[in-house]
Length: 197
Image (cartoon, rainbow, N blue to C red):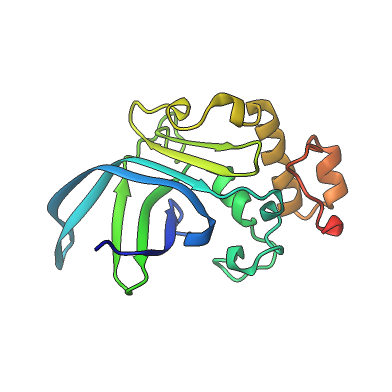
């Protein structure tokens, strides 16, 4: 009998984390797992699991762009009120370093992902993050993988619109009003003004 997943905890390059409860996880796959035993600290030799293919869908709801909508998605790793909302953080940087799968029985497993930087950036060039027309956030990590293998391009918002959304989230994060964010370039169906909730 298999174990039931309680949540998935994403760890970002700057050591921030984001816990996603199972009910908000759509498609999910961790595959091509390799195990190795290595020294990870001066006093620790451990077995490490590497996931060479990760696909994650955070279930769509445009209102989830607003972190106040659902307290389960509240994202304040440093206890600051102006930190990026959930989707905003995941969309802002392609820098997931590992994924912890927590099970209902209290056990967990950690999977490190394929991570490669380029051009002086700390972002993972092997990670792709896209927004679906249904409001879902899709994350794919792995070498020689293409988002089209997992999600039809027709189901994704245009990459230019995604950049506008990313910019609008940054505007709100930087303390600008939601109206300023709309004016800055994104007024599509997937951006929800908290005053409209």
